[in-house]
Amino acid sequence: MAGGEDVVVAHDIQSVLSSSERDYLVRNNGDQVKIESLKGKRVGLYFSASWCGPCRQFTPTLVEVYNEVSAKGDFEIIFVSADEDEDAFKGYFSKMPWLAIPFSDSDTRSHLDELFEVQGIPHLVILDENGKVVTEDGTEFVLEYRAEGYPFTAERIKELKDQEEEAKRNQSLRSLLVSKSRDFVISSDGKQVPVSQLEGKTVGLYFSSFSFVPSAEFTQQLVEVYEKLKAKGEDFEIVWISVGDDEESFKEGLKNLPFLSLPLNDKSCKKLARYFELSTLRTLVIIGPDGKTLHSNVAEAIEEHGVAAYPFTPEKFAELAEIEKAKEAAQTLESILVSGDLDFLLGKDGVKIPVSDLVGKTVLLYFSAHWCPPCRAFLPKLIEAYHKIKAKDNALEVVFISSDSDQASFDDFFAGMPWLALPFGDSRKSSLSRRFKVRGIPMLVAIAPGGRTLTRGARELVALYGAEAYPFTEERVTQLEAGTNEEEENEKEGWVCDGEVCSKA
Image (tube, rainbow, N blue to C red; front, side, top):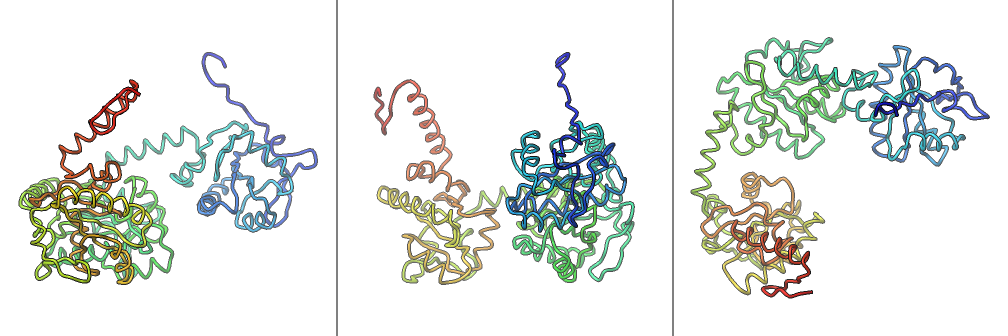
């Protein structure tokens, strides 16, 4: 330490990578390469293993980056294996174009683990030409910036981040979709369409994967919206950005889409995913006619409003919000659960129960499925709370809304429930899922006796408070939370509270 600054240790590559019996590294064909040949090069120490799933996922990306960067002649990667079986090591190493510590030299491999304090794999440490650690976060840098991040120094990463900020300030459709090697997107029949033809239009950048089922389901709805807007003559285009599809899935998907697309595995795909901070598939980013971002993801709005969400401007979303408020204010149990002739629910032994019989009660909509372990785990808690509440107040009912894939699973699960259900395969299920934004199960939505939505988080309330959560109003939740805080405070002071009585411990 000097003046409060950390001393940066320079590692001697020759001594760090060699042993008393060995002054060489190996290639996957058995060739030996003298360690002294690394002098003056930047070195990446890649700690990985064949048995590690994340490692196997990361290695192809690192190979891609290595092949591009190593052509400069000043960079090499050394595989430091955590495998315990030589055959596994050889099989995994055969996919790597770089060097490795021989599998037989377990002492050096262990020493490197300790020296660089490897806590998990994959782990990539980058050393500069003098042996100083440039970064211990090489895995993250490679995933985020690919070869563009080389030499992966803090200065280079800052430079790239600054460039991204500058790009956002001066964003245009060309800056988003045009690269050094490409100024076009492709149509479903494989033809090249100049990006210039999209300028001045509203453009949706659709991040999705055909191999991801929820994404594929939304895609069909998006196609319908797109075709309706095109039929009305709207200047709207969608550019599909494939995330994680293989070549076969990509070709099959594109063939059946009316959208444009970036080429599969185009470098811009990952760059745009990072640029828009992609956190979920089914993301539709809207770029306005001026090339600026109008909205970071309108997928949910399209699910709820369809073509009515167009042109996806702040004014349009403010208008939709007012419509939603009015709908919520006018919401009744019938408006939620009745659709045309479908005005009933399923009781035991297949008895049809009119929705009108539930009017005036607190109703819990229970989105669940037999195949879902968390659903099966939560069910006994909900049944217990249900019986306790009904013993005191009969003005409660639960409606099971199934996500099961077959009638037998539905029947088996529903047989253990003491309440009502939406019939299996009922068309009302999809509209209810959209209305209440069901993104995962189990989910429990509480509806007040007057028909308004009390909370979409009733599952959490039942899990925390059981029957005490009834009637699921804001006032009741506030009381429960205040009671919990009082109990915690009393416990700190040596009091124990049981029901309405508190006494000294």
